[in-house]
Image (tube, rainbow, N blue to C red):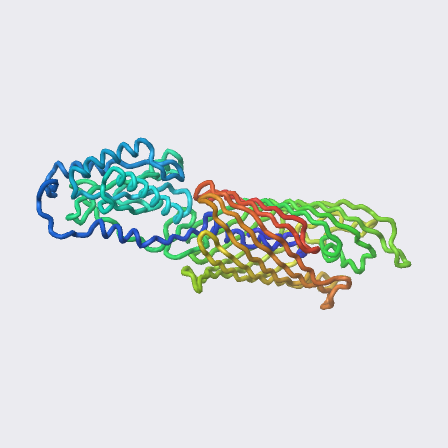
Length: 513
């Protein structure tokens, strides 16, 4: 998950904590399908046995080979559509006019229109699109004088149509073969819809409620994590800018020892972080997922400080430029989804994140004797931390509301000498918001994050001149799904409290799935 644990704890950007999980909820990841009972009702109507049929004018029996050939001709002509459209083209109208001639000649023959779509977009969008395409064909047949009672419409969305082997490649030449309405003619006294006299196939039963994740196999219920056995690798770039004074005084990456004993007055600190991170996810089971985040950090810092004189005043301000780069603190995470069917309308997930100390330790870097500041900036915090959390998701099409509550526990560390045992301060984080789907490819997100950080301590006592920090940020962003396995996600956090970073921008996209 994207997090800023590789930077000083005071600079963490909590709104990025649960984005990998939420991405699969929004973009690709979770797509709930509520298949309407209309499918089953129409399919049952198409198979129903009417009262006894007696051969007469315009009525031919099942054994009549000529009629069976005409029914087969109906089944061979699919109507084609443009991407995301349900309008009939000239070819579609010509095919339906030919079908209408046959239907008028044999009034006992009925017709089933099966709407379909390509694999792009979520299930519910494609189900509705397939239904609209079938309705367009039905309206045209009715305008030609065919009774509505003889025309039946169902939609399979992007699910496979039984008996129809369509292209499986992920390209436009294949997708156009899926954007169809499949036309099936049949006799109501037969319990099958004919594709050919030799191979009758029953109409499918209404599908169960299912969900697909990144185009993989269907799983009953709603799953937010990767399917079992799947691996996903994502590339994440994060930029952060912050201008601060009080936060800087509680920032262990600025001073080698605690600010209260440096004899330096902090006037202003400007920081910029550039982070390139590889995030790896592994689906252990459908409800259990492992994660590892490996960041490379480049950071710059400009500090304006003044030495404290013997009389208690301040000397001439000094401008100091610092930078640091290298491996940051690696994160390890475990995510577990408690329920696949909503409980009280909500899906619940537990998360545990452990942050290591693989980045450079601020307490081991050399100090500039003239300024009292570090020569180089660290890429880590120097402390292990453990972060348990609870996430909940409340889907109401086309919106998914979410909330996350996390507690960050930092383990104290004894550095010996004049420092002794230091704890950088624990924290709580609450963020909430929603995802709004405007089309099958685009998602807009908006939310708010509030983090509270308690003061650091030295040998069990609060460090002088430190206080509780409140970091509040407004969150917004968007996701664009190129196809079921590739997306771009951009998110922005704008600080609204004095302690919060000014702005943070993240860009995420998959490298391997």
